[in-house]
Amino acid sequence: MKGTGKMRNVNAIGAFGLGAVVTGAYIFQFVLHELPCPLCLLQRIGMLGAAFGLLMNVRFGLRPAHYAMAILSALFGAAVSIRQVLLHIVPVAGQPTGYGSPVLGLHVYTWALLIFIVTVIVVACLMLYNRQFRDSRVMPLTGFQQFVFWFIIVLAVANAITTFLQCGIMPCPDNPVEYKLL
Amino acid sequence: MMVLLFLILALSMLFARKGNYTFAVAGFFLLLILSVCWFIFHISDPININL
Image (cartoon, rainbow over all chains, first blue to last red; front, side, top):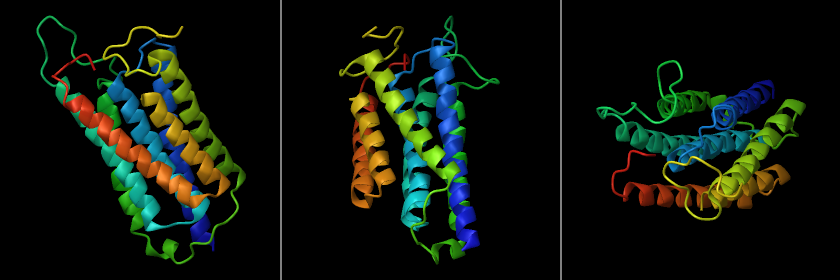
């Protein structure tokens, strides 16, 4: 069915977009040498989890349950972002505002909150298209869909490795400045 | 702990890639539950703006 194939591609593009945002976080980590805090890592998990929900649609066919997984993950990420925004909402005299460098005037966790909100809205809008659920056959992955799948898997593994180097197996420090194991 | 969460995510995705639906979904919800627990642990800490 043509419409179903299109929707699977839309899901793959959405997952790729979320993966691209997590890749952007790596630019902060490796280029600007700003190591991620525990809440930042939880936001990355929320983003990759939302991408996982969308990829379930690509791999196992379009189902409302898969969209629900993406929404749940995005809501979790939004809750973490809100927590971090609220921690820094009151400026302290003599100290720089927020945590980390701002991008286009907003801190990274504020951008993350906006992205999670947009994710919830977009996924809810995708669910409005009822016809996609009529054909829930499992179809072979196209080249682009394979690429997105491996992209997100590699991101998850890379995050596991860099987090291990940064924190070891213990809880991550609140304000990390160096890799514990390097 | 955070390493474990990323590993669970990667494993769930690999299971999904291989076509094992049950393990993929179970891994996802395990990840979500553990992440929420970890988040609550952080919230219960005294206010620390170095996060």
